[in-house]
Structures are given as C-alpha cells and as structure tokens.
Image 1: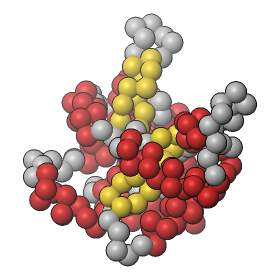
Image 2: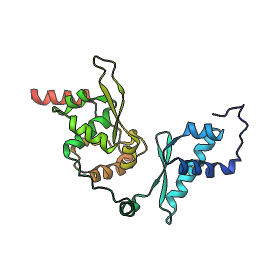
Image 3: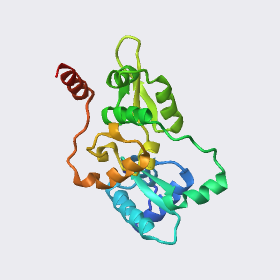
Image 4: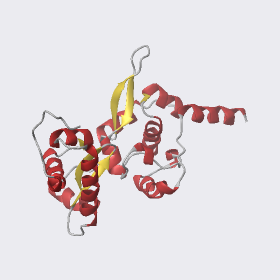
Length: 218
C-alpha cells in the first residue's frame, strides 16, 4: 500500500532489481504486502515485476537459483538440480525416510488443516504423537494456533517448507488423489505435476469417517 506521507520513490524500471535485492538479503520469504510497504509502490506493479522475474530465473539455464511464489509471498531458493552440490557443501546428516504412517498423517493435516492431534487420530485410529513430532522436526507442519475448546488443543497446519519441498504454490494445488496411498515423496511429486488438470476434491475428516462407518456397516 502506498503511503502518501512516505517520500520514498523508486523508478518503475528498478522494481524488479529492488525485489531481487530484498529477497536475496532476506534469505526468507517476503509477502507482497511487505514488498509494497518497503518500496512504497502499488502491489499490482510489484506483482507484475515479480512474475517477469520468476520467468527470467526459471528460463535461465546457467543460473542455480529460482524465485518461487508461495501463497502471497515470494522466496529465493536453489534449483532442485543443485541438491547434490549443496549436500557436499553442507554435509548434512541423512534423514531417514518417512514411513507410510507418516505420509498418512501428513495427508490428514494437509487436506484438513488446521486440525488437532485428536482429529488426526480420529481418522487414523491410532496415536500419532511421535509422527506429528517427526513432521514438526522436518519442518513440514507447525502449530498454527489453538482450538477454542476445553484444554485448548493445538492446531496443526502445513508450512512454507512443505510447499517448497513438494513444489506447489499453495495447498489449493494439492492433487485430488488420496494422499493416504502415497508411500514416497516422489509419488506425490508426480501427482502434483498432473494436479492442474484434475478437479479439486479435498478429503474432509467428516467424509472420511462417514465412509469408514459405512464400510463397517456393510
């Protein structure tokens, strides 16, 4: 939002460069609102400049960086193809692969967020304490508030890290296929590539439990 009392002015032709500098210096995502506030410029101008910048980075075969839009924010990140190079530089400890139960839990949270631990366990039918802790450690979910109910249970939602690693802009791009069947992150990534051509059909806790009850009756 432009502040009429703010005397800062930036030529329109420098908007892309200014956004690029801010993202590089930040090292984290910056919202469109924040960019507009810093540059004292209309959000539409910034959004158009960012769209062009995203394309330039994406189409540059010689560069190792990308700019991604995550919800209403932007972040500068490395290209997936540079993963092995970064692993040699940082020498990170290998993370053990997630289990099928972990992907089931992630699915329940991703499709129904925000949800409580009890709601997740109502769908899965078993305790999910250790799995939720593992997903929190991975940075794929976070505590996003508390439910206005006795005990004020924590609510869990997916994170920007989840969107980045799964290659989507927002949870609206989640595939319509049931995540309950996924065994590897590669399976999910392949389905995400096809998600744009599918009708949105999110899994709700209520519909899942209803289906379970019907199958028990049958």
